[in-house]
Length: 101
Image (cartoon, rainbow, N blue to C red):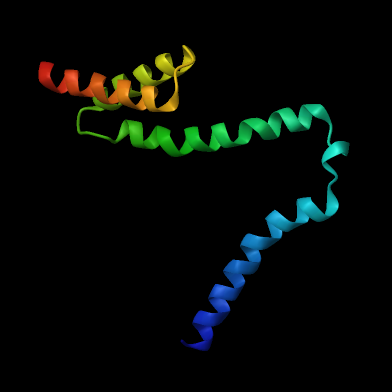
């Protein structure tokens, strides 16, 4: 392996490790205000939404496949269903839509 490749891998490892290590070293979990903790608890959901939303709009040439599948998932998730039920309900909704169209 070339030296450039080793430097690139080492640099990526350091850049990935630093944001994970700094909060553990410098922050005490008990000292973080509760409102900051509430915001940080929602970050994974926001990131997941940012990753999924573009896929919903580009799943098919017909944009309605993604819109109907996404709305179905949102409604079933809002009702409190398990994740697998949410996914299966979206699949069934899109399967029924493909039979209709």
